[in-house]
Length: 144
Image 1: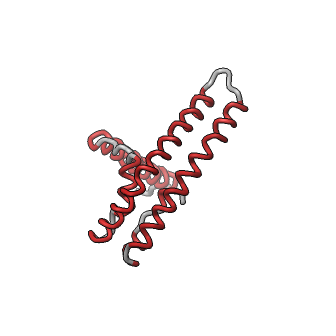
Image 2 (image 1 turned 60 degrees about the vertical axis):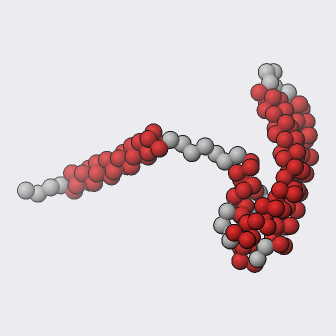
Image 3 (image 1 turned 45 degrees about the vertical axis):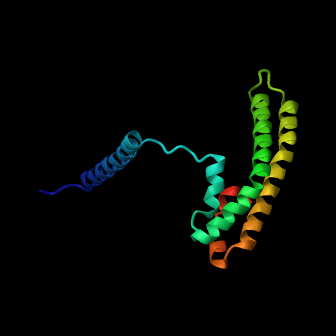
């Protein structure tokens, strides 16, 4: 029996389609039974800075972070409040673009202050830990 080229192509497309559908169904079932992992809060993200360091350097990093934590959290709260103002301005009805721009302008200051404080803290940690641990410091998630 001779199978035409069109039937072979249709068969291949059918197999690929079934494979993609099974893959997507597996992802959905995985999310359903495993659940979604909640995003890390700010404190968990801070603790992630030293996650891969040896214990001695983790102790040093924790101590430095604890010294700066009050200032960091104050700046984080100020930024969160500024971001709430942005959300309010963006959701206002009627929408006022000048109010939204002003809210963003106001939020730039606490954002800059938090970024500077985090940079100073990470530099303080980096200069007090071993070179090997400095290679493992997670800075990519901070946008610095």
